Image (cartoon, rainbow, N blue to C red; front, top):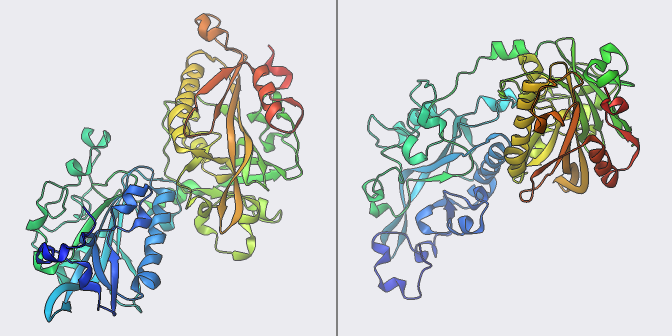
Length: 523
């Protein structure tokens, strides 16, 4: 694409496409981009949206009062819950109206704008109020300042478009996503093949189709644009079984306690029943994370910074499977000591007077955090039992992690420890994983909301281990530790002794006589 040259009027541009002159006297309409710059991050990608082949005439005020709100809601939804790539198709139906120039019909005016997205790799732990909108969903709105956006399924949008446009019986937006069938992921899908390979639709430009075969030149506006954002295209809706999910949530309990020293306060998650000592702050809260009336792990939570300082748990030998199908949860007793001791999913949070976000992070805090993702201190990959995995999906166990760090060096380290403890720890392994902070925060509505960790650190203690392990593994028992910079670059994880980790933490946090494991995990 190129900017309009000064003499473009003599170059026959207007035979095939709209020009700037077409909008000079169209006071009722303004230019509306189908691929909006607000859905792009890179400066060049934003610039690429400023072409009239990506523009349709919309009623003045429609974008600012109606459509932009939906674009922003979708941006937040995909930022927050789409873990891979999201593909978006945005298009129009036409009304028979035109913008005229010199008594000639120049640009067709849309009757409706519509949009659909497709994200196969999404967060299965989101609230049900959002989860049913994955892996694909859609919306449309009348091109009018007073209209409202209607959100619908892909199938419903397809039926709507069939009534408004001339399309053949094979019309699809995303192949396989709107035909009611379910597909097991193929080997090709697991390799995250491209949109061209897996979401190809003969009506979609970019899917081996010549665009001019679809867009009639005389209309001089696009029928639709296809927009890749960040995730993987869905081939089918995944089944959503609310009965099973609700059953999983029954009996989820967490409790704010004075001490971790009692059995019902999760002391079994700590080596010798003793929590790490030396962390000092008036805003620290001790949480016993319980599920199904069973203590699962402990968390020391900073209610002012809205992140955990550490989570302490027992490692369970596992195959590394991490995904469970439950929504993210919060801790009611942080908001009010008189609240239920049950950890609750966010979808049930209907009481605006609970002041939940005064004392802890909420899902909305992550809606605009392009750079960070939710990272668990007690990771599901270190748990084997399904219920233990479920209990890790609470925001009181989560800190914002750089995407590159979380999915790169830190994920590799978690898997390394999983394999090491699987292989050589013959008793119970106790793990404490925590953070140091840098002063950087995630903001929401110009308010500091969540402190961003500077480093993540972790240490394990296993006093009963395989004495015949190779020396390069043997010297890392009974205890060893590690830390890594929570950053996009230079984020390699450094393994160190427990004593070196404690010295590292002392340099970066205000602590008093710090000790992570009782008696330094000495045998």
